[in-house]
Image 1 (cartoon, one colour):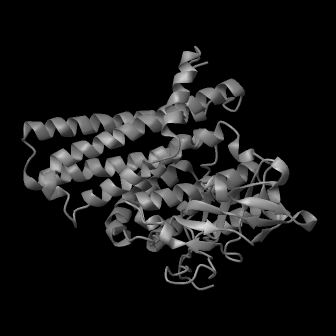
Image 2 (image 1 turned 90 degrees about the vertical axis):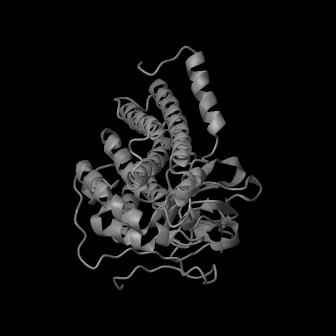
Length: 404
């Protein structure tokens, strides 16, 4: 294998091989602690930001950026230290994990979206996979293969597993918003088992069996470079070695809903980028003495710090002893739902304050505000926001609290 980044070019047919290997020309440095991973992400953020405008193309993929992530060891950050990672798989390391994701989001939200999915897949495999599977996929991650989680689908055409002999299955149906499609070597996918047996997680070896991609599906407002195509798996086959965990493992709480704090961390990173660029823009114009600009920047600083505190609180909930027990899990999920809701509001407010601060002049390319606005607005549209907030209301109306 050469040391280049092996991808399916956007112009190739959907049936082309979809292996993605992010290779480094030198041996990648090992990140052996959460603190090292957080520091590496903080150092990476300005580099990602400087490259973001070049990558901001519909259907593109941040190839160079993932080379950099591999070269710094960040692609294996959520592997256990025994598997060559930084130990961000541990609940006690939730806060540095969130801070790391915030740094990557500050650099480029499209990279952050794909990176968060990659790390999430590795966490799920370590949680539910058999020892041999965990070892195999950890080796894939160390080799630079990209993972992700594809769960969204049209219910009328969703992924189904049709039983064959010897524990094998033939796949039918498609996933939508399949971020990184055509570039992930190991997407982790949910599909319906036959006869109502539940939902099954499996890893698709997409380098050997690439799904058929509908690139026309992805004509987004923002997050252009996430390659979130429609991926049709019809006709592909998987074996028992590809199945991860028992049926319905993916939907176990608090991991399923509680994982929302990770994408919220990436989003807050985008809000931080908006804040930093607004401050720099006003300094460049010499508008630092304007009392109204000072007031808006004060509001933005308060909102950003509020978001950081929400992430800290969410991390403390996730790291509590016994967090998986039913009552504790319910509190963790409710707190995660509050966190994602609060950070969504913070991000929306940040965009409005920034627009008023920079005016029409600031929203012209090549300044970054136009791209940041598109990317953050699009990324904030996560599933079931109303249901998440209503679940918080149910939790508190039932007389429950977050400290029991």
